Image 1: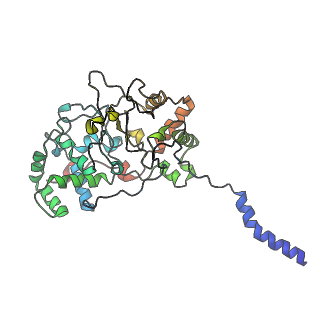
Image 2: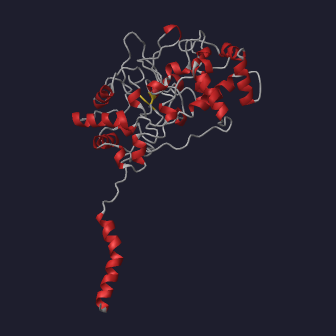
Image 3: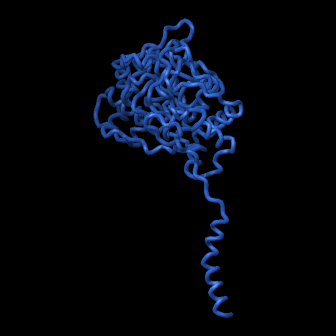
Length: 358
């Protein structure tokens, strides 16, 4: 072999890996960019770790205690309603609506927002009147339509249960049981209800096969023409803010002031917090009144630009002009891709009766 052949073979050996690499298709990054540039958008993606307040550090015993309280109907005035009654793991940590039913069969004016991923929201309830999960956790107990109790009576009930007294002392080191301790325990359990795994999360982490072609196109619609990321952006698929969608007031009811009842700012009249889209397929019916029975109906509502007759309609609500195929692809993305696969969200079962403290 002459020198020229030797050089050619050496060059070919150097170039061969590059030639083979170039022949392979380049990996396609997941489509997660938020393409509608509203104020302060964040890319879609997997959720970061939950931030835990310094005055309520997590522990296994605290979480177990919080779970028991979450499912215990004894927190209500007549032992019929628990947190899980209106925030049921089996229906996306909400309820079957259209609005929530509390003590003595009373119906509230709003359906229950989901507990799942609530740990990421800066404000709680549809109108944002609670500044933390701890504040939210004890609110329904004293609501006359929901659990119908008083905080004083609820605490007295718990202090009359020796098993609870022992567990609270183990966790907090003091007796008697206090409202602050109840709030911290329930909130700690709720911080474990976090969607960290779904087909979308797997796709966002690089598994191109995690979504079907139709679902990928639905994600494109979600990020683009569907205008969804005007409000449903970031890893939790919500901006955590408040918007008036023009939802009609149910017949026979007075208009719901929404966020205005908290802020007294006329711009907030009829505005409600953007819910997460994670596990949205499990939470029919939709909107704060439960007015839309299916995802298809919700998309039709948005496609029309919401309730166009509302004088305080959010300017982000605009007609979309979606085709039937685009609507179908968007529904396909929402129905499966955002449904949780991790057991701490998808497979939580009620506490059996024989496992409650006695």
